[in-house]
Length: 170
Image 1 (cartoon, rainbow, N blue to C red):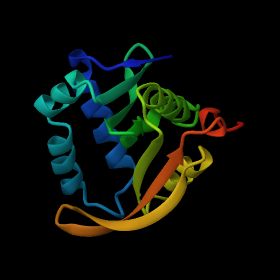
Image 2 (tube, rainbow, N blue to C red):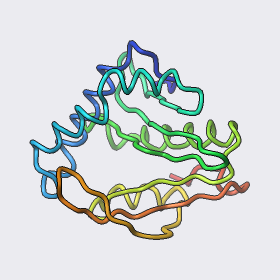
Image 3 (cartoon, rainbow, N blue to C red):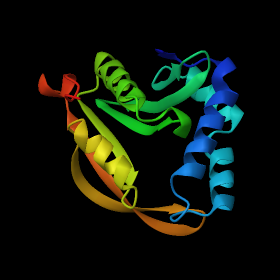
């Protein structure tokens, strides 16, 4: 498995990982119709192509002869914002998410980030546990709207330190 920067050729595969992930994870939180609409909006081909080409954006893919996961982040001043990180449900449980997060963290720190921020739906306990396992600390809660419905979202922060640049023990 390799982790590399995404190219335009990866766009449809990224969209497919997002569709599979959303379909598998939040059925009790978000309707399937809303999932389809949001994936089509958030991962519109032109929008993804723009982010892949934008210097302050970072889109990485986990590639095992095809894209099986991805991360999407942006750098704003000295803060790296991890917008999304998904591993296809058929490829979970092998540490790919951790490898993607580590590569994303390292790339953002290399590009000048001093702080990383991630937001996770509060109802998504596996997602919240994932970020906590990598040293992210919850710093607040806000509300986001998905498909016209409000959902609480937890904000996590990771400060750049020697400890934060090490992966958690498995």
